[in-house]
Length: 278
Ligand SMILES: [Fe+2]
Image 1 (spheres, rainbow, N blue to C red):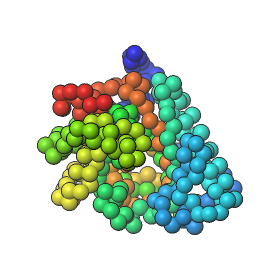
Image 2 (spheres, protein in one colour):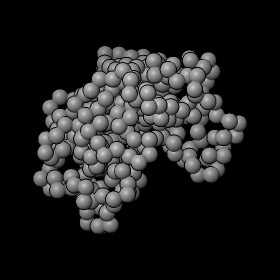
Image 3 (tube, rainbow, N blue to C red):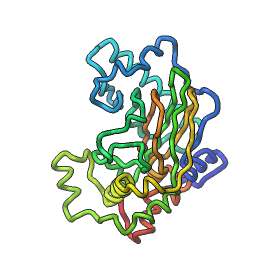
């Protein structure tokens, strides 16, 4: 059953309806023992980020066991901080909060990516090809830990509903048996629902459209060093333009946890197409 929104849900309501909340001050601060980890030299040189899975596995880090243990400890500390932050600010989420990956991002965002689909400098909503959410929300907490005091620069685009309508005619329905096949082939870790197919369609359509990237409405937002921000990246059209050194924690939340389910992409897309998607 969906709990009705109450005054303790103001934070959740604002987050769900506006997509982004910037936290004042410097809520997460590195300890002196952690500052040397904020460097590209701990990367394996292949992966986009260094990450910590909920299982405790570190990926994307150089083969240095001592450094890997320290990196895991830093990311675990950030994960614990982000979890307590969300539970304190949005208590209704507490019983539902599913913890995803933690990442330490040491690449300069402006360098971009070789593949247009992987280029997060292009406006997009988040949808993961290998990790279907089945309608669950993607909530992410970020902190700019740039040691030189440089800001992280994002662009924020149009509201989700406008965005979805813009691409509606271009999105395809999944083929019969497609979800089963992708799962059997190991492409997806869970079955891809029609919702996931539509969300991936939105992600790709916007990133691959040069004219949209040039002309779409956007505003620039600067996150100063030390700042943390919380974003529903599945409903917020965004692009990371510039900046280096960031911590990020991903969470998943079911629709039942939402203070305003009607602001969720699944609800908006289902109303658009007139049928259940997940
Ligand atoms: Fe993104």
